[in-house]
Length: 74
Image 1 (spheres, rainbow, N blue to C red):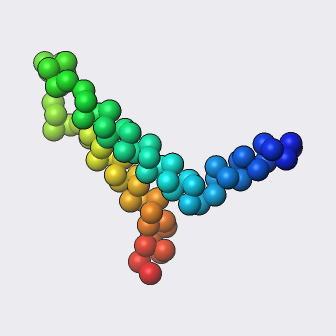
Image 2 (cartoon, rainbow, N blue to C red):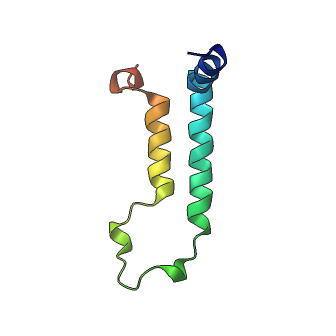
């Protein structure tokens, strides 16, 4: 593998960089979801059955930050 490509992947997959990128993507996702116009929802949409993307994104961030169940309980 080319050294530049390898170095780029190592930077992108470094735990601190990856954590920052996941948080940034989650914030972007939440901002996008909040910008959607509720008037555009289908009339038969049951909001009780919908998991909002911001909630889902936060759960992903929490899961990534805590790590495995054993690590989270330390």
